[in-house]
Length: 257
Image (cartoon, rainbow, N blue to C red; front, top):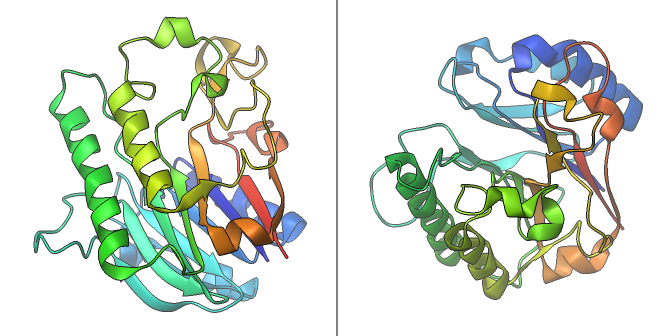
């Protein structure tokens, strides 16, 4: 079973690249972020022609998440179910069960800066994710939480750690929220197979950062113990960041036995 996360930074702009990638890599489950589409504009028919079911939670020109699956798409739920009774103001999380694995496609808020209200929203969003997991799932379940987390888990995941002190994506508070998820019982599947620094999933469009290998690893595949035990390979497809009109993110792939 191949599970993939990819922030496409506008599905309307990248649709041809996405369908070509699907035909080349044949994922079983593809989770997309930043679709930047309303639900009525999502091209379910395109994915159906490729043999996939699809679900989408969108809000127009911002945010938007999707799950595309050829191994079933059951119990679809957008948003949080964490007991608060108030929806997330943004379309940032979508749940579904695919091939027996409960999957969430997440687009964690950026945070902008440590003194911005969006940073407070980001930390609270991560608390809501943890509460949802605690309310509706168990670490013993087959579970995979994937997406653009807008957090580099440690200094190996940033090309210039010293240059990002006191900035979002690397702040201790954000990393602590990820650590809380790990303590709850989910594992960074990529790091299970790759210990080295300099392996990134996002590169700024500016200043030739991709070609200069100046990036961050912020697109994560987090799995419960049973999923981690089944994962035998993970990789970032850097080639998808090349060519005409790429997303600034690359797909991150986990292959499960």
